[in-house]
Length: 308
Image 1 (tube, rainbow, N blue to C red):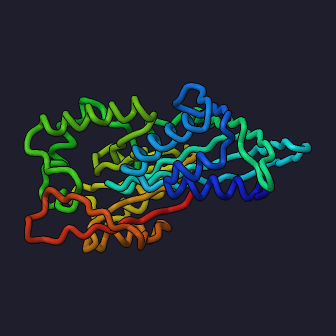
Image 2: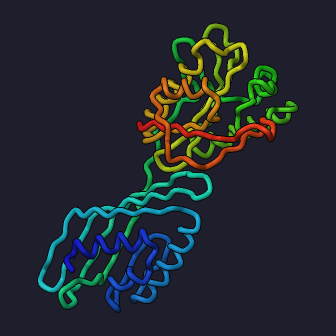
Image 3: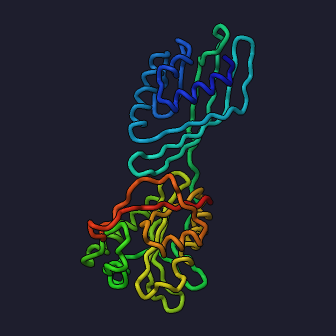
């Protein structure tokens, strides 16, 4: 077994959740330094840690890891291999993606016609600070701005309480002003946590409230978006102009993918997304909730994604 074979076997065993196969690649006196654990000493301690970690993760996620060697050197009966790894986890519940990257260093010891890992160090990269996102941005006709408490009555009156406007949305039609005030609180929480969140859509000419949009961070490098427009703002190209502004915002923030969900039969929204370059994700099977639709109507959801 070559060093390349060890790397590929370890990768395949991790992806299969096979802690026994991972342990078989390690020397009896292996020492491992890995994230989220104290130093592990001995093959059995490493195997037990891996088994517990993978059992917990694989119950929640579909998980894939890929190793890429930068340098592998043999020095007699010893060798080392160093490089990078990338981990992708997809939630079994809602399809949300989470990604991480890191670096590894292995010291290997010759064993018969193969190699065993004697020392192992894995370190996860610390995410850098994302670029600062403006709370206000403008397009040729629109001004997008972070919601403020004083906006709640206007939001309620213009679109949030209109059952025709909210028909295909994932949040319930607002029945009272308190519902809209709760949304503004949620918006502040998103901005505080992620440095970005919902935006209100206003006309640059006069500042009339037209609707809402935003960026919802889902994981490293990925976010979702959507939009809602007051009834008198339909059919004027505002949706396309808004989505293109959000794409530019996501690109400036350094995101790698932007997605959007919509009801399969909501043709206008699908046309907007396609016009803006989004592609239909044929693998998407996770249903979404549409709390404003009667029980007799379809809940079929489609997902669109755009690589940035």
